[in-house]
Length: 226
Length: 221
Image 1 (cartoon, each protein chain N blue to C red):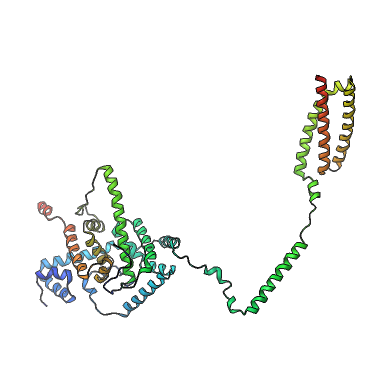
Image 2: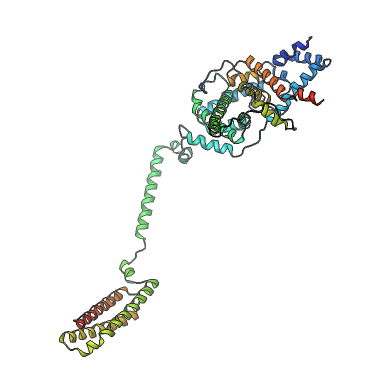
């Protein structure tokens, strides 16, 4: 599937600044309707940014990086697991934006389009990395098994969550990361992943259910201990 | 609004703010729902651990470089043209006058530089040896003279006897050459940097060398 120049059936816009830590705890915070003045500014900025990038203005790309670079790198790092790979993915994303910005018609938010390219770039990188690993494993004859349950020896929350996320399906992982970590709305996630908003909500629910099962202590061993 | 334990998953998936509020009220009296609600929220809090917006100072520079390298249409050299951007606003007559004045100044400057260029006498320069070169010449000359003296010492017995008219001629020629060499050396001593004198002296030495070689060859025959 092509990555760029695709029309989206929605008009949601993404605010440029990532949410502050801790603001995404209550899901109902995102159900506010209507268009606020800030949202209007974001829309204007988005359109201006898109137009400037289309004109080849490097400062527009720099502005895009200033507004979203850190968030993009975090998304990429969580999808790829390595800060170095994440930086490469962000760089590739900017190059793909430059190559494809002429075909951007504004049916979606420019920033949503940007993140969609980023996510596809991350999955391209993952595929390429897996292919390399497969070749290496063919040579060694070993197949590493993903660890589904977090180890019980007091692992850090972050490591446990990362391991549990690795065991989710691709869509569940993407939606969880974009919603819970990055603070995007379901409408925005739907645009990035080319799914419906309802599918995004359902996928998040399934992802959290699975994560909960994986992260809770094993009940059987607890019972045996008692 | 009344919710039950059965509504919990539906609210987790797509509940309205009112439904969430009702679920919280229900959870205050239902330990199972309270535990589920706590676990659900813990996941959201834990997710914040995966947020790292630390700066990558070199990343933008890297991206910018890549963008410039891959830029489909290189940006116009705006800065290079900026200095004469004011020209279109000046009338054509003034532009011509300024251009003419510029050409005139350029011509006068070139003429002045041509007329006042430092005139160097190439021949004089060539005929004079610099101190370093002179030292080299004198060293080589001394070695050459010593070698010729050795040759003369070998030929000396034959020349003094002059048993044949040919040897007598050689002897006479060598006396003339020695006289000329002494004369030139005296002149070179007064003017050591004169390359012309040095060349003449060298020619004399060569001639003396060839004459001595011929004497020695005649002796062998």
